Image 1 (cartoon, rainbow, N blue to C red):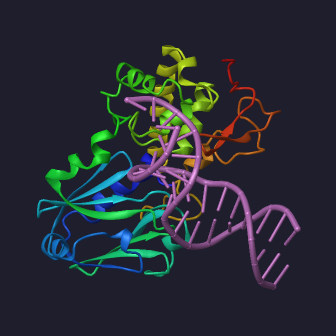
Image 2 (spheres, helix red, strand yellow):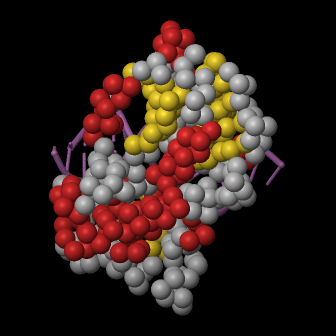
Image 3 (spheres, rainbow, N blue to C red):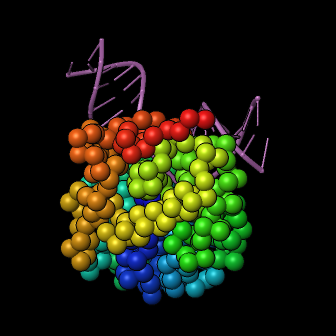
Length: 293
DNA sequence: AACATACCCTGGGAGC
DNA sequence: TGCTCCCAGGGTATGT
């Protein structure tokens, strides 16, 4: 499930592989919501456009074009992007589509470049999308207006974070950090990891936490996201990128998908899976104790 | 405004 | 074996 580190990993890959290329055409396959764009706009502002930059905000990729339009991409949970050209490179949700002949049954969009290389957008559950917007209007997209600070920016300090998370004082801390308007880019994996590191039970109400704990939580969020990027994200299994690397963050995970495996602090105890904020949630029952209200 | 829940969608696994 | 049910989950919509 692509979270900030996975999307950043993809951004870096695409930045190297597609900036400077010219788009010849795009196709979409049996999934209109994956590419909900006006065909006239596509013809005018996508076809023939040169890619000038690939940016990221929260979990959203922004592929800038020299037509003053931007292809805005959200992979949601099961989206992946695969570049096929002189080399093959892919990132996002780990499935066999990363290595299979493309397009396949999960390909929703393909973009052909004039040099005959291609970019495939595959998405098992069809929740993700690629939308064409005028670049100047991207900041006005409702999501962009609401989204919180980039956690890895120096400007995202505890003085910024604490008042934002305190607006969600009566909800669970896990729901609060998953809320993109509180802080950008945190998803289920890094939420569980950062809460374990901070020794906070995910179902703790925000109001039960003092500022010192919230500052520590922010520090751990920054650390797990930075480590995730360093590791190339959590796109696991045996999928290899152009440099022969695979995303291996999950090898370093403390709790995520480690149900019934030993806690790294308490080897005689096992990680438990519970449900918080409607999400599967991993905790150590000793490290993370729910405080009395 | 804050909070909880349903929904979108498909495939994999559990249980019968 | 084949059926049904549940789960995965980011973000939005809806109702309280």
